[in-house]
Length: 247
Image (spheres, rainbow, N blue to C red):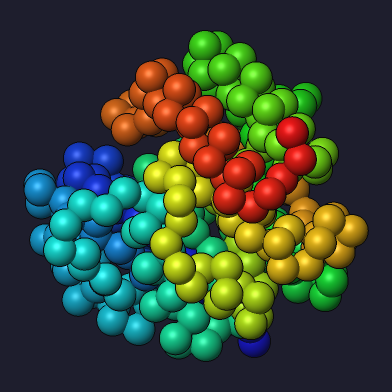
């Protein structure tokens, strides 16, 4: 039986965290644990997370950061803590469940069936038979940004920003998450850039799998705003320079 430890970054999620969805979800034939990272929330998030942990300490744990450090650092600290527990797989999932937990088995199945795959990213692809609901403005801004990201990385990546990602535990993963990210906004891109730096492009292409999720929806109260696109462009430039990526 493999073991998956899923990191869930949380900042002021008191009104949005679907506690029952997390409590009721399980994986057949797999051991699943959740590590919630409270990123310096100023509302009742900590109380809710502690109540969830106390209901089943074997499945739920909480890492509390003293101050708000941003999603990138919350995820990084969570993954580091997860790796200390030596699971077979780890990853992170957005607390608002824009990607529902029902997508976990699909992503995990890729890692279990294909030993060469080191990381699986959820991708929001609007195909027949899938329920992908995004505001039009965010969709078109997102596609433009994805094109720039793909060109910067030199990889045919469709969607780096879906908040559903799983990884096979390895020494390389420990290295990738071993130091803070430069970017607060598109650290997902920086994860790929760090793997590129470690393995090279040819090896990376065979180690990454984008999984088209069957469901995704915009959740009211998202902390990502349209103006953050400009910050993401700035961070993309910083990543290109820091990791010596081609223009």
